[in-house]
Image (cartoon, rainbow, N blue to C red; front, side, top):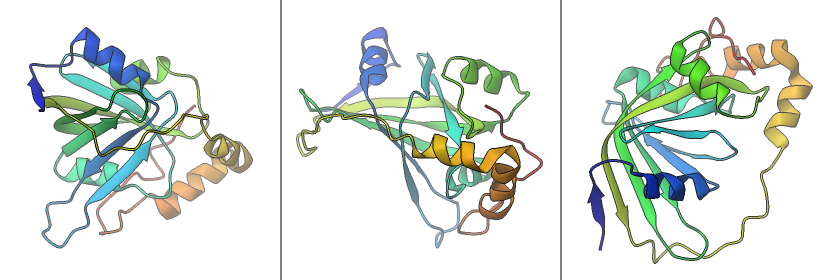
Length: 187
């Protein structure tokens, strides 16, 4: 049976820190807009307090999370245990995008290894923390992180990443404003 928590306590923070993968779900306000679910990994996630989390956002193939958060802020972050004891934890809340030069960006980026693909930080004020059994989640072994995003970013260089963001990250698939070229990424 699932449980609703008052916030992220120390035990839950340790469990979250031990997970290698999390999923982010957002949606636009439009009824015909596309719901987006994105997998995230690497050492990017930070629990900032009992009701606040954040992660380093890398340049990617789209900008749905940023676009949806800029439009309405609604977000759910989900963690699944794939090893040992099954468990799913969901963090519902309101998110926003922090850019280079903003205090939240600087704080969260400093907590994680530098990465050439860093474009923003997503900060979530958590309003609901819950877990469920996870009995339907398969047991899998963690082998390691893929290094393709780093290699691609290093190959592209800062100018290539900026051009890519101008072309692929300026608008969401539903046409909402995403991250623009004048919002530079920084490692």
